[in-house]
Length: 290
Length: 316
Ligand SMILES: Nc1ncnc2c1ncn2[C@@H]1O[C@H](COP(=O)(O)OP(=O)(O)O)[C@@H](O)[C@H]1O
Ligand SMILES: [Mg+2]
Image (cartoon, rainbow over all chains, first blue to last red; front, top):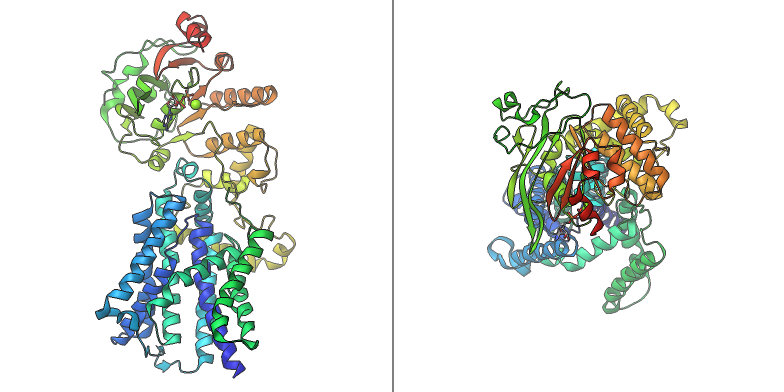
C-alpha cells in the first residue's frame, strides 16, 4: 500500500521535473516570463490522449504530443516576441486561458468539463504498461533523458547565447546573433518537453479534464522554478521533490480533507515566501536578474 | 549606388596619402553585392557612406540631413555637444533605429533592408556609450560569443558538447585534478579561440582571470572589456561611442594608445567623442555635429581653428 503510494508520488515528481526544467529554460535561461507553459502541458496531454484513443500507437502519439506542443510554443513566441517583461507575462497568461477555454468549450473534441476518462495505458513494443512500478520505470527513463538533453542544451554555446540574450538582447544582436531565432528554438524545446510530460501524465492518471491545466498548476510550476532557482538545472530537479513531498506529509496527520486542500496551498506559499526572503535566488540559483 | 554622383566632400588628405579624389573610385561601383575587402586597398576608399540621414523623435530632429563618410583604414572622429545626434547616428548605422530619410552605404551595399544582427554580420562592430555586458557571464564567455560567429546552431552546439563529454571521459584521470575552473561555463575554448582571447585582452590591457564575472569588474575594466569585445568580433569597421566617457585620466591615455595602436594595425575606426581635445592628436579627420547635422569637417588643426566650431562648443 505505502509502496504504491510512493510510486505514485515519484511518477508525479518525474513529470514535474520535466515540466519545471523546461519552464526554467524559457524563464530562467532565456529570460522570457512565459506563463503559457501549463497550456503546452495540456496540449500534450489532450493530443496524446485523443490520438491513442483514435487508434494511433502510443509512441507515435507521445512524440506528436511533444511536437504539437513545440509548435504551439514557437507560435506563442511568434505572437508575443515584441513584448517585454510584464506585457509578455500577461500575453502568455492569456494564451493559457485561451487554451483552457478551448479545452472547456470544444466539447466535440474534449468532452469539455466532463473530461476524458479511460485513457489506455501505454502500449510499447507490444507490451502494455499495466503496473505502476513499470510506469515509474518508464517515467524515470523519460525524465532522465529529458534532464540529459536539457542539461546539454543549457551548457552548450547555444544555451550560453540564450543567457546572453536574457541579460542584454540588444547587446547580443549587435554581435551578430539573431536573438529571435534563438528564442523561437528555446520556446519550441520547452514546448516539446511540456508536451511529452502531458502525455506521460494523461496515460498515467487515465483521466484528464481542463482543471488539470488551470492556473493552480501554473502557479505550482512557477513556484518550483523559483524555489529551485532561475537558470539552475539542479534546482529544477530538487524543487519538485520538495514541493510534492513536504505537503504529502500532511496526509499522515488526521485532518478532514476540506482543510487539507487549502493547507497545501498555504504550505506552497510558505515555502515560496521563505525562499524569497532568505534565498532570493532559489536553492541552487546563481543568476541575478537586475 | 550613388557613390560616384554623391555631392563631393572636400577631402583633406593626411601625410602619406596622395591627393586623389578618393570617393570617386568608380571601379567600386561595378557590383552592388557585398564583397568583404580582406586587405586595405592602396589608396583610401570609402567604406561607410552616410548620405542625408534624417531622423525625428516626435518633434525633436535628432538627425537632420546628416552626411559624412569614413575611409578605409582611417580613424575618423564624430564630435559635437551633448544632444547633437551622435549616438542616434550610430543607432541608425547599426540599424537599431530606422532613419526617416537618407541612405547608408557600407562597402558599396545599401544597408536599409538589413536587420540589426545581419548588419553586424556584414562587418560592423560597435560599442555603446553605456557599457552593455551580460551580467551573468564571464569575461571568457563574452569574448567567445564575440569571436564565434557560428554558435547559434542548436545541433552543432549539442554535438560539440557531447564531444567534450566524450573527451572528458577519455581523459578522466587527468581532468579530475584540473576540474573546471568555472562551473557556470564548462565550455572549453578551442586553442585558436583561446589565443585570440589572450591577444585581444593583452591589446586592451585588461588583466583579470578569464573566469571573472563582469559584475566583479570596475567601471574602467568594463569599458576595456567592452572595447575588447568590439575588437574581437569579426568586423571591417569599428564604431566606438565615447570610449573614454567617465574614465580617469590615466586610463584615458591608455585607451588613446590602444586606439592609436589599432589604427596603425590598419583598423578602420569611427569614434564618437564629446571632448574635442581627446581626438586632437588622434583622428585624421573630424566631423563636427550640431543639431543633427555636420557643421564642419577637416583635419584636427582646421577644426580647432574653425570659428563656427568654437562657437558651438563655447555656447554649450
Ligand atoms: N529614443 C529616443 N527617443 C526620443 N528622443 C531621442 C531618442 N534618442 C535620442 N533622442 C534625442 O535626440 C537628440 C540627440 O541625442 P543623441 O543622439 O543621444 O545625442 P549625442 O549622442 O550627440 O549626445 C537628443 O535631443 C535626444 O534627446
Ligand atoms: Mg551620445
